Length: 316
Image (cartoon, rainbow, N blue to C red; front, side, top):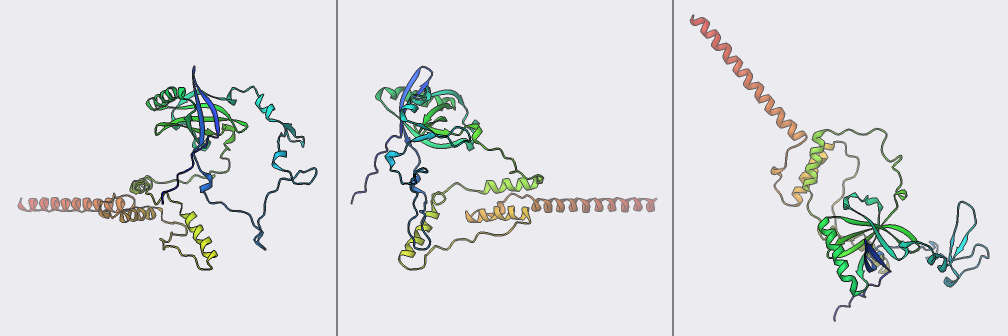
């Protein structure tokens, strides 16, 4: 039986990218699939019935059909709601309603990851857009820059970043700077101090990590949840593969934990533990042995000089 073909993606929005005097008509496609994530429905625990969200008018107390639901804007902190129609929104004097105007080109590392939101693939919306599309993509690749602009999507204006990716252009919606909350109360009042050898041990542990595997990029939670559901339907106990037990409790000896972690990482990859870089307590022990050896050598040398001195006086 031939495998079923995936349904072609449909654009969620169409607009133009304005790059100076160059205009590129594009279609935006959702780059992520939220339906593939784990989701739950609300139920009544007494009988398992579904609990649904029903749209009810707050004035009449009756359920409203979807074609009776419109938009309203609530100015200030009062209870007044101003109805807004599609015609009202279409009449907004915003150039971003149909065009993403690139305002600046910056290094990708200048964008705060906290600002990054939903991603879209951008495809050309007309044959004439092919050449300027490729031009913008290659210019950003060679210049190692991303484009920043503004666009109105789904009834609101937002910042957006455009970047090249695998031969295509990708748009990332960005939060406004005022939407990022300050870190008040997050950091501890007294900062902990770490020793240089502890930082070196942490760096050695970072170096011991390997590349991500396919198994690391697998949604094990979803599979385990599906096994629980299947077991409940079949009136049996769920069957899970045996896994390594994760250590619990507070780590008291930070250096020992770092060094043990490096050794465990090397063992998991079948590497020789003897090649492990010495740091922390191991380095201290080595230094202590060297110091003791130097002191012993110095004592022997001093004793030999005294003996030679006495022998010379007796000979005289």
